[in-house]
Image (cartoon, rainbow, N blue to C red; front, side, top):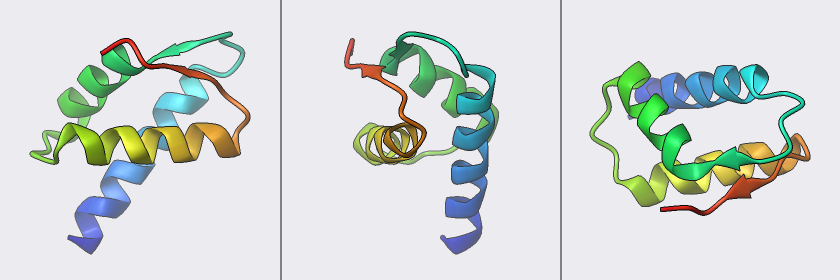
Length: 66
């Protein structure tokens, strides 16, 4: 799980880097992108929590459009 967690965090970091400067980031779109990039079976709630946590650190806003 540790390696998978690192993979997911890296994918989120890359995604957020790509979205730098965006006013809002779609949760639904971001989760779909992360699933495609990581081919993970993690629960959406876990991905959402990690995405929100990492976006907040960067001062980014996530739209909860699920």
